Amino acid sequence: MKPIPFSPPRMDQKIIDEVIDTLKSGWITTGPKVKKFEEKLTEYGGHMATLCVSSGSAGLELMLRWFGVQEGDEVIVPAYTYAATANVVVHCGATVVFVDVKDDFNIDVDAVEKAITDKTKVIIPVDLAGFPCDYLELNELVQNPKIKSKFSSRTENQKMLGRILILSDAAHSVGAVYNEKKTGSLTDITVYSFHAVKNLTTAEGGAVCLNLPEPFDNEEIYKYLRVKSLHGQSKDAFTKTQAGAWRYDVVEPGYKFNMTDIAAAMGLVELERYDEDMLVRRKHIFDTYAAAFSKYSWAQLPEYETKEKISSYHVFLLRINGIDEGQRDVIIQRISENGVAVNVHFIPLPLMTYYKGMGYNIKQYPETFCNYSRVISLPVYYDLTDEMVERVIRTVVEAVEVNS
Ligand SMILES: *Cc1c(COP(=O)(O)O)cnc(C)c1O
Image 1 (cartoon, rainbow, N blue to C red):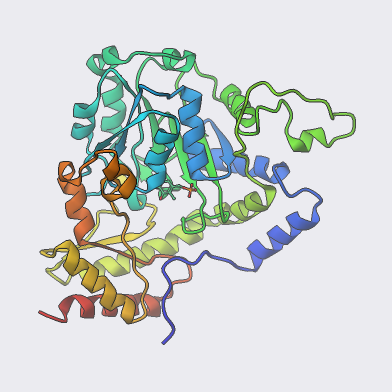
Image 2 (image 1 turned 30 degrees about the vertical axis):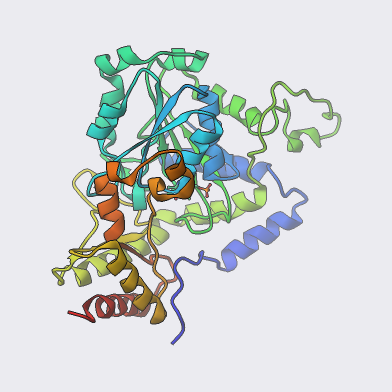
């Protein structure tokens, strides 16, 4: 039997045609398709403006830099996330303050509150596996007068906001819903990732969704960020190629974070069929896993639909009750030997060499470790057929029950 891969991208003729069309159009880097993709994303998320960038990581870093995060500042990040969420803080010279997560894999708002100091500038919640964080509580927390009075601003943007910024890492959660609003419009700023394994992919890519409160002008910030994300050049390459428009200026030493039109071409196809097709398929796979595993007392199912929240069904985080990390690894080994690719989202950052070396200790994040040590991420993707889903379920059940 053919092995089942973990998360191949959806690639069909429609995407191939759009990419070829772009390749032949005479313009392959940032241009009209990126602009169109940005407009469609703004419409989709219901936020104020969107800047497409080269990756989710680039988007997160760009916005930390925009806010002026620097040495001496602290940024609160869940211990349970991918390295990008914390690495960008390190790039800015600021201190990562990890906090524990809850049983739903998302940042614990009580732990966030305890971690806030007069140095805290940003909180980066992560919608793990596509399930939205407690945004009502998080937004209330940063507005709380007692918390607000601790905030000290060092830059113009910090002064204008007058409180901690919420920069949401929605790398997994494009299209997820919280109280009838989509990610993008739930916090000040939201960053999507369109990396090859994500729900909506452009091979590599990301987007910054701007939703800052007044007196910020999100459209103006978008224009400024376009310049900042392209070496501080006053004109982008597309504009410069128009006859007579060759002269430009460099207004600051910006970054090289722009998205290509080739990537945007893929994104446009994917976005158009995302809700009616991609999310429908993913939900079906989630529902099938949930129905099958709910029959076993050893299985703990992830939350993915509640009264307030609807997941974007990124990966299915199955936890096995009563096992330790070593037993989990053995189960994964058995599953792999039977031709099914599973994964672990994620190895907590305090367990990674760099962060461990910086003095972070996993013992301070017990819920993070408890989730991690029992979790197996099951494949969820568009081309995973019902037969393949059944095979994944059979293989997992056999691997868990072999000794019992
Ligand atoms: C993938 C991912 C990112 C980074 O996205 P890239 O586009 O690969 O830079 C950030 N945070 C989380 C949680 C991710 O899974």
